[in-house]
Length: 328
Image 1 (cartoon, helix red, strand yellow):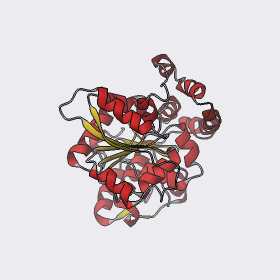
Image 2: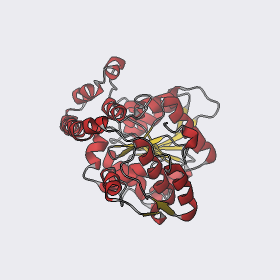
Image 3: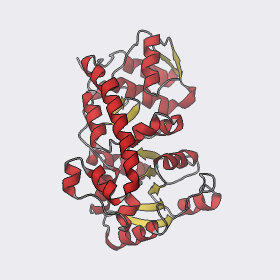
């Protein structure tokens, strides 16, 4: 019988789908996670994997690791949702970063979220800040910066970080390009005091009005990519590469996995609980794991870091962990 959620070692509904972590939460659930992190002033790295994240993660281990370091990973794209559902993951649906920000922006609340905007084309963050403060209900902008196109080190000076931290922001939204943005967030994780940190690349442009978001019909038909190519032709090459990634994953991982999908392992939750105390996860008898079991191991590794040891790892399990970015 399939384990119910309260039998898992962690409450977080995390799955690992073809090497990318995804939380099985909808828009309201994501907003609740953000609200809890802000209330507790607890660091939360929020990532929004789309097909481009899958493409980048194939060749960039540090980029993939930034996703596993995230406390919330939302499926941002219909292809990602399709891959997850083929793998048996009960995703409620797509939660795009832009939709999430709009929902936070438009909700009525007595305590608006204080946002700091970092990045985007020159002048876009300033325009976005003005637009938000003129009309938003659930979000106010308490600062912005346009760092240009320098290196990560050049954009991580004491002056820059001090300005962000001094703003008192609840949420830091950056727009530096997915790879650079995730790398910047990881590089500065220990220096930031803003609780919620996220790269939402298009949000700054959308809020500034420099790029128009796809109409609702395009989004409903999963054709937002076509609209974005019309708006920004340079994205055509990226979407081509992402389509090739999707085709490869579908033929080499989704179809074979659909025919032989592993069940959750009933012994794993107790072993994970023991590992939280001992620092060692006993993997005796474990082979191929379900997406949910991989998610539990990913969360264990996120919480314990490099101190976690895994013992009695059979070749089949090592292969499963390796292709899903969890080994060594």
